Length: 594
Image (cartoon, rainbow, N blue to C red; front, side, top):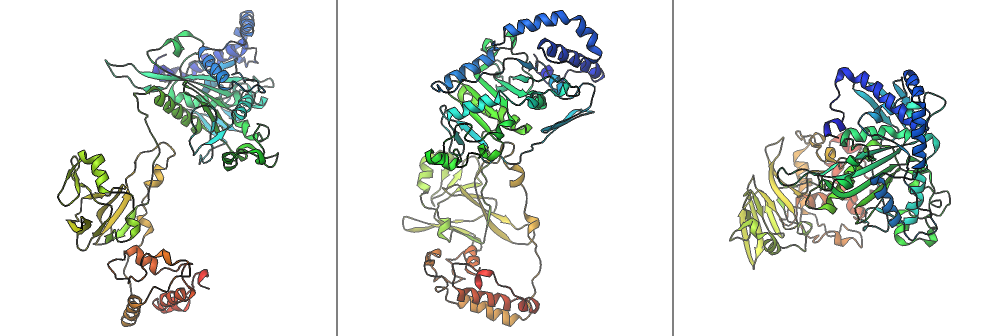
């Protein structure tokens, strides 16, 4: 099947109504041949004529009830291997009789009742519109926190994923392939009393490694999607993104016979939103007293028999091993979760196949962006121990031109300057200084340069967007791209409109200057409560000391529970006295100043 046809791109707009009628006839033939109720309509005469032929075909299907297509057999063989040793649990089987979406558009036609333009259920609402069909799932997740679960017994489980016992996965898989009857009902037949109840399945062949013309052919993996009939709109969504892989029962669509273009990886996704109803005890999770430390931490145990698995919230559970098969249960009908699972399985195939790179190889790692004012490197917090410029030279010396002063200039990007970890930047003096072999080294601090420390922190001069001044701005180097849902829209938002700039007026200049002088001259060594003295590495430093940064001064003059009541009262008094008369009379101190 060519790619354009698999995405429905070769349909002529004027033929859409005729195409829909053909799809409706095909659907009725498939239902009749499977022994399910049909919605004949104008096709009733044709179905009556073909009755004996369909009956013979149905009997042949009955004799092949246990037959699985090649892709499904590979998945079933994996399950047999994976559950080996679980003698008390019958190994679940994949649905053998499903409505196969063999071409693009069948799932879309199945998602609405014949002759109608709307479908409504507890989990989805679908509407026929000019552009096609609009699906609105009841679940529209905004966070994936705590929803990624991995079954034990396969590849190692990352620390940020929840580990699930094999026997619990087996029990949930058994429930997944035996959903409630209402979930199996096809929207296509929902307008009549006798409704067809069956699974819908789809074959995907998403690209893992694109073609290199003249060198290497395109490589793809195979993924089988199974959904209860009521969720056919999910498969319509998925095939519109990744294309339809064809009929898995035909040899021309068998990945096992296409060794030149198959990565050897097989995926399986089963939609089962009803799994959120299961209790922890029902799926064999241990009681709290019998659980290990990780199970207690991740909630994989229970104290009350009525506790639901994952607190009744949506989740996805994956089992995979080095053989190249991955099976995922999605306890949700959110379309985005289905799309991301395909991307996850493509990543799984990439990692096993090698010689390929994922389209998105990770999420964004975002760090605070700090305004250091006119100086940087004064506080010990900015001089993170454990990093040295010499180690940077040993590992990445080929990337830079080393300078006599003890810093490096990037060969490809000369605006990038590699500097020491223990340094001081002074904007007013436009200098960067550090100690080397008992001597003070100094270079010029310049705009347009990016100064990178050994721990990955970078600092640069930036002009203030609203006033005629410069400041030192620092952030950690980080990967700027991310997968969908990784927070791109959040980390790209500016907070400039959260800061208001304007003139400042004082009531009595001399009085205010006297108060400022009192702040400069005060002894700050007595401001801490017992036990908090270590919060300041050198409390004898004055506010104007060259050893204090702007952030340190702000912290010094900000009320804190670690300060004594006397100091907080002194600070609060000066704050109120140095404000306007109206504010001075209404000065309210924080509760902890009591």
